[in-house]
Image 1 (tube, rainbow, N blue to C red):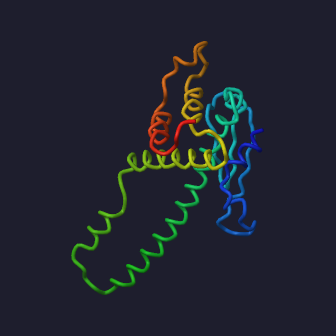
Image 2 (cartoon, rainbow, N blue to C red):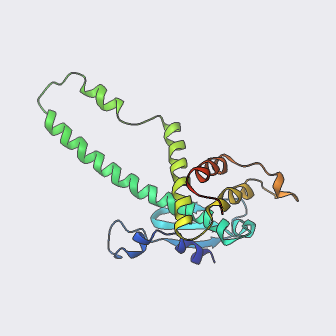
Image 3 (cartoon, rainbow, N blue to C red):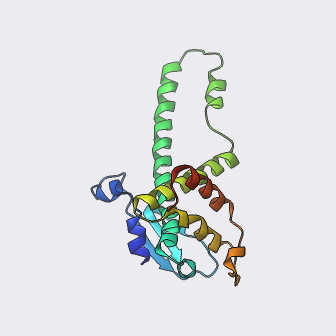
Length: 187
């Protein structure tokens, strides 16, 4: 079930790439026994582990797809980050070559100003982007993205209460609800 649902949320373009394409991520999904973890575990090169206990809390394949799509989105982000890093290195070499031997006042300040946001803000932006990507992956695979906020809600407590409706929504769920209201018509 984990493999089937996981592979279904992998974007079609990734599945259709040649196996020797360096940009292809070879996704693999495994259920593992890890009683302490209540989310997916993302390893290098497309390996997504999901604790059996997480699978058991999910009441539908739609909810399971939410957690697995998050793992796929994480791997897609990692791949994009590697590409950006390579491009920045190439751009840096180009800039260094262009200004070699020349004195350009303010160049260092301009580069520092455009180099990015603070670490915490960047991490929040990445988490929000990953949540948006995961919802899109779910939707494209035919799952109901409206089930995602509930999935994350079910994973928050160590032990589920008798009345799961009393559970608060975590930040991920709240952000996803905002996106859902903007982009996806409720069924």
